Length: 222
Length: 238
Image (cartoon, rainbow over all chains, first blue to last red; front, side, top):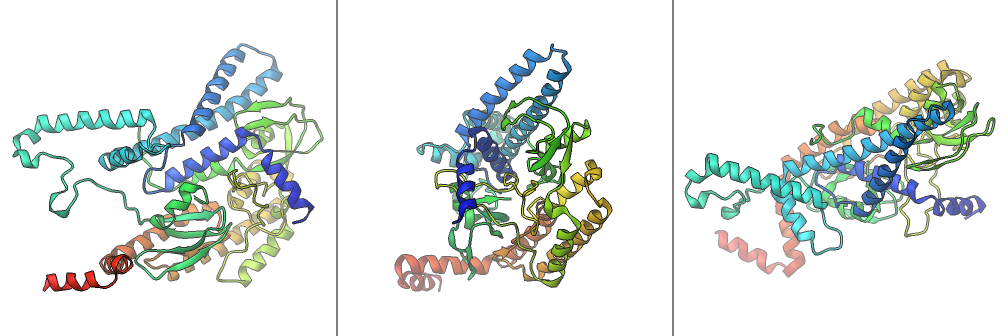
């Protein structure tokens, strides 16, 4: 390790919280856009980012009356950045909503299983959306046709006969990942494929094979 | 409200990502420091060089408040050298820039677009992740800051073609298991190749699914309780 490396290390550790949050949010957004299944809700990061966005909007509203050209340009910069952040947050939430709409029952099961852990899968408002949407949907189904079926055929989450009615995303889909730390040997279950993933490497692998490392932050989806 | 787009980033989204890359500008006007959402912005004092995100650099450039200093790898000499390397080694992309040392374990490691791989003191001999997007955007908005923009444009086009040919050629090694190394690939190239590459791998996987499932079950049983159960299953079936 030479002096450059040491200096660089100090620089990384002193990166402001805001910049790290932006990086984390960006990473979550890309991952959510690419991953076949819904990922854990990044609660703390989102809380901080949303709070800052709220304060920034207040600032813009405060200063809009000011016609001084210098402040005016500052405001343009601030607003441009604000719009970029809003896009990021909105696109992230919409990508999650799409997954919730596609596989509601599967995600609800996963969420209920994750409630015991400190970080649940869905945010409170996502959970509320999911449950009330499902309640509306099932009451509509039963009012329009399900109630006329025999009682044994009315369930929407039947698993008898070895076939589950609950749709699942394809967890084996291929994804592009970048390694952020050395993770060692990766083994794709069901095949003879084994390979070593080192820091900085980019691989095309099955989502199920790298899911754990993406969750722990050792790999990122691109 | 749900997003109507298919999985994978669209080209405008990749460009949006690329706009977070840091580039070096030479300001022509003073600008006080600002508290931005993505961290504080240092005051701009002409003619002192500063690194700012690309979106801000483009904004400053359009209003003629700053000049952009193109990164060293975006010079004709560097691009020629990289292009030579790309044509010489036909089976892999040219290596990405050297990574900075890993920070202490509790912080998240940085990755593009948050690595300073496109500032004035970036490495001159390697293409960073967002090379194509960044090059195109700079050439479009700040062509007058390049010494020889036409030549740079030509070289970028050459590089793109060589590399796309490699990506297409790499299709031959795809199989159901996945596990394809793609070191040095660029952001826009991932975006362009994603649908095809993952489509081929997924398609092959579905064809081989039943054989794979058998192998998976067998391996699980071997791991859990040796061979006895497997034999019993076969007996039951007969």
